[in-house]
Image (cartoon, rainbow, N blue to C red; front, side, top):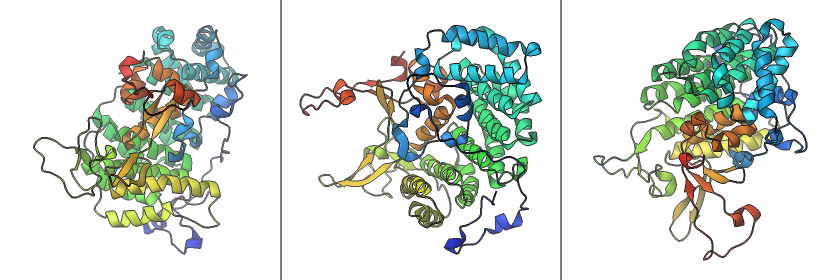
Length: 475
């Protein structure tokens, strides 16, 4: 495929010197077709098939800023009353490797992924944790088929996010790193990058391990996949960018990393793949947001920003004003020009769908870079009475139970990572009290009222106040 860093010739731009200096070679991996079907488009009269479960592992499942309402519960698997018995049978099949075939293991792993996504299976797997971990790692190590290996990697992610076990990272990190470097399949490499990110975040890794893996992922992105022999593969580069951002949300201080990482992400803004550009842009917005922290008692008053600093989007969860601590990048004006061009990109060489994706995402990303107090989907409209910005409009529906406010980039990045792993089962895990999910996204949930659910109009005087639920209150 063409170099990910190429510039559109129609725009009269040239390839960057960094890209020109790299050896360009052709990737020998098969190009996988994009999967357009989604869980939310399934007919509710049937269960999700195992083939759909496998197809959904593509990184194309990542949502854009414009699709916050996509996290609507449509868990048709919940209609299956015999799921626990089926899971027990599938676990038995997975552990009986000697009498299994590649096809049989693929089917068993696919079914395991489906069941453990759509149900919170912590109790059911508790007595089989070590055995399942061994079976999954064997499928990853031997790589008998791309499908078996990819499903085993996703099964390992689901095991890690469900089991609440702090020893998993140390057990699997060497194997996952070796798979990323040595697998002959770029699809497996990309799945292993995602799996390593999940195991680092949920599997008991220390902060220094987070930083080590972030450096690994940054090397993959900065080289367009060359360092892992996945030359210009968008799946691998996108996975590396997304997992870098996911792990970065757990690191307290990113001042040193920010100056080194943003140039890499700026290079990836030149990609020919919108998903690569968006993933890089989201990391940039997060790093600018990270350069601001809540004001403390001994801080001097910060008057460097515009007059909307006291709005809801300019405050942390506890209402504290956000104060700039350091410069996220030394040349913000240059970065703003690049982001502005993506927020207004046009041309026949870009499809309408890609234009819409770039516009909707980079308007929000640019807004955050211009004022890091503003989170995702910050409204630029102004209230005529108060002369202030309306603030963030990011809300995600959690089935029929409530809505979740996503007003900071770190929340968006974590939610996107959780949604990639759990997909349509996110709501089930959230409300059933999956500790990894609740700890990873410790935010308030607003309960949806009956009038909001069914569209019944009420006068403002009679509308009941919203009740906020902390994660500990929902199970």
